[in-house]
Length: 303
Image (cartoon, rainbow, N blue to C red):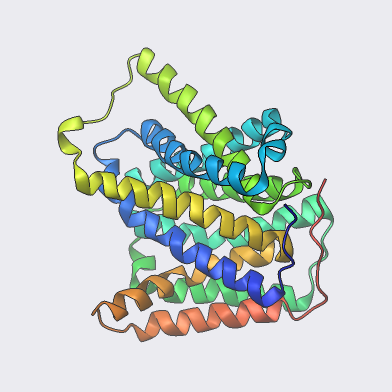
């Protein structure tokens, strides 16, 4: 199965949708963190994502693509970056809250562009620098007064470390498997993360770490896990990988700063009040994304 040609507009739309779906996972995680230890929750999330993605990959790309994939590399990248990043994200949210995690995630464009500068020798243009600044300012505007009440301690550090691991892992997912489609790259690394975190979780239980509080888990928590694993991990990740494969990790990561607006917009459709500050912040982020991409198109290196 060959990779479809995606226009810049389509790639940005995929990235926008990816960030919207990712943001849904933060309140879902809040429902689970008190009852499930971070490592076990991470393993469960990855297992849910991989259980869905692997059969879809097999059906759409075929047996040969699955069997011929670099599974060893997929496990290393998935476990060492995506799995680690997801675990650190749960730790961060347990120590702080979903808002703090989301605000710290505003640093993702800096991390993404920094990785491209180091790994690819990317040279920053004035348009890129100004676009990056607008993206960050717009993201902070979208969070409004919440920025001033953040707890920037251990939880914020874990959130930043999570963003670094996830951004690096996303780039490696794109560049390390040039023969695979975005679906294959996503399924392979998510399966790798599921294997690695499952082994780590099993070892932790054998060594005496606490297990889930089963009495506190019911159908609402099961629904939250499905949102956290299927939507905010599997679906979000394939959209994200498909997008950054065309526009790069730096440009793609700017979209994360508009996530509060996307969530607010859908809540508005469900009856919540409109928030003009978040709308203005999203507009500033959008202007930054457009400005950053006003220069020459950039080809993502694979292999």
